[in-house]
View (tube, helix red, strand yellow):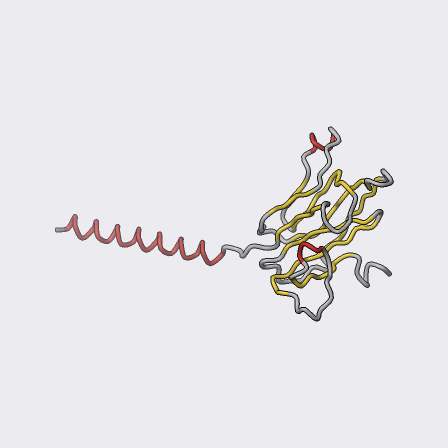
Length: 169
């Protein structure tokens, strides 16, 4: 009888501990942040991406592999699902297919990216020497509102993060 009582208490405490740990783990799980992507086949871009790096608050979120960059590989599209790290900067190096000119730009996203990034997508478009960075929101665009950003996301509201009024000063 004493063995049964001790075994019951140990089993109960082990179960309670396991339940508490599971509850704490679920409490601290972060919600997904935004996805990331680009597609040079849309919006009359006429360019190829030579290198890119998306940095987050805690680590690199997306980047090209050095071996591919060294071999001269070009990217025309890339996509990444929802991440748990908040984007802080975006570096892109691209080549204009018409002129052959190479451009690069690093955009600081910290001052322009909204606080709530749940179910959003960060993307960019290049036209010649200019880069435009957008955030697709998880809200349908009203028919009377103008299309902002890529034609891929014309059914959604988009925020233009770069260039914006602050970055033009």
